[in-house]
Image (cartoon, rainbow, N blue to C red; front, side, top):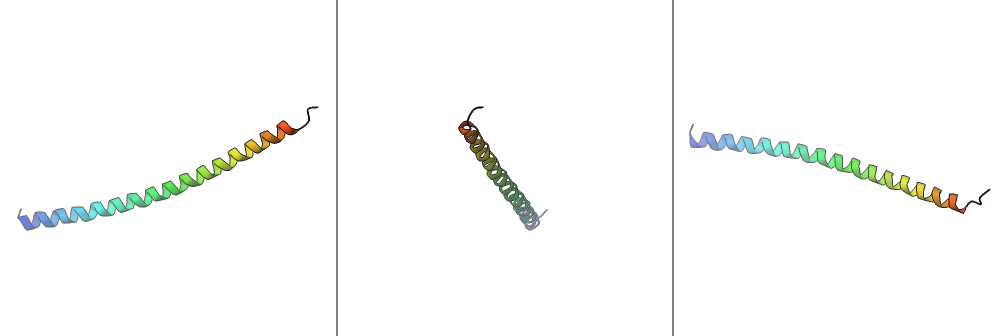
Length: 62
């Protein structure tokens, strides 16, 4: 294989790898967004539980 053919082959490989990396980054961004959304929801649930527990402590015992 000539030197020029090898350079062209490696150039194509680099372009293909770049496309794969771009695809993986897009997937990572989507996953990160979903995880952040779940984290916010869990924080809200924890807050509701804490508020509920505080209110139960304030209720008079029967």
